[in-house]
Image 1 (cartoon, rainbow, N blue to C red):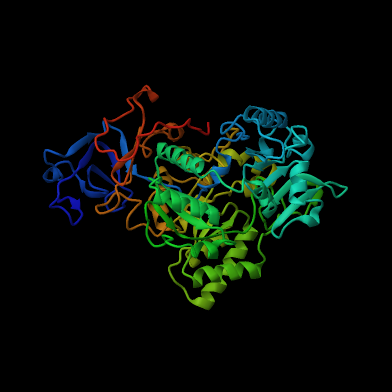
Image 2 (tube, rainbow, N blue to C red; image 1 turned 90 degrees about the vertical axis):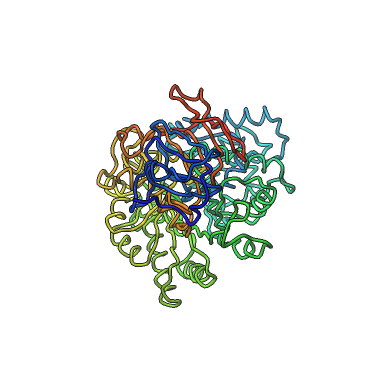
Length: 583
């Protein structure tokens, strides 16, 4: 058997990896002994004997020493610039992602932050990550809870889902939210029995805090934060990062970062539908290929909220609806059917890939109707519309998705983070067991992906794989064992199938000659370790386009960490930020 190589076999390899499992994600050649890299691309894969002809005195041979080489992980849905507002602000998340377990701790964290930073009166205080479902009180904080922290600072704390927030009285006043009728289109203001805002706001109403952000942003600080964020992603094996609801200001910042060569991971951007036209009018916008690691890939529409926040749009009522909303409450859509139809048709007409957030099955129904209508009007094409989250899709909807070529990207980390909450509070056992129905999708031949929706939860890929394979909740219960998938399927969902989702299967996702040398060295083989060991695997090295961008320090584990001293690193080898694991 001759080695599978690119058309450049006359060249010698810069580097060859051998000595451990090399999992290609290519069904035609699932595992190989050796992989050769030249420049930014994979030169050849095969046996060590077959690749001998690519070796000369300058070739570096990397001994994996039993560790496993896989394709670089692809962030199938997340919010890179969403981190920028919250990086360095109080982390209000519950364990294991943060320290908060009760409302009093939220108040303490905010109070300490104001004091330590000496934040002037009148300046916005912003924090994120609180989760009412995991607080001891099992309820949202209120305006009064935040007023007890300060009545001189406008305060906004954003829910872990990013679909809700709590404002204190000064923030409510600044937003002009005096009753439920004050909400902007697509937003909700929760009120008490007297019609007075409680402080909890939903969806588009959350964005009012942006009016109080500094008129002149700290661009150098944001660029530094982008470097730190990439360090975090690289330490987790991620080589392609998504910004899944980008604003115009966010895209302009990313363009600047690209021009200044700040980006060293690929960043794929999907503009928010309300700003997409303005974004696509920006000069020198990279659309069909990456320019300095930046590309705009389509448009993102948000059609409903979050199930854990009880704002997802369901076809049947919540198990325990919010008390003020009555027993028939099932959430609400953000766009009307006509408005969604118009956005889908517009995206298709302009040749933009559509990503649409649909957590609830009623929202999913609306999207499928819009897709069917657009296809009937414009004709069928390879558009690969993506249903983001697809948490509660039914069997009949999966059939329609298959027929329409829809790619679901499942937020399967929900099974751990909110599985108990969905079973006991939001959906009930029957519906909760079907959240993120990966097996049902796989049985239909649907190519799906999985994601963490970071910063909703940390962007750690290996615990995400574990969630897809184990479906174990915080309490240790198994939620919907019939929806489990194999480790190989889960791994494909963050590599080969994620590349397909992004129309990048010709250059990423599998280890084949000619594709980018986006590689990750793992501590063990995810296809052979026990299921419970999946979440404890870690990344030893991340290579982006043939260049090492992360290498685990030797003292980071009792297992030998660094495989080798760096030889040709064009970007810094960075140490990992503290890792969040789900157990």
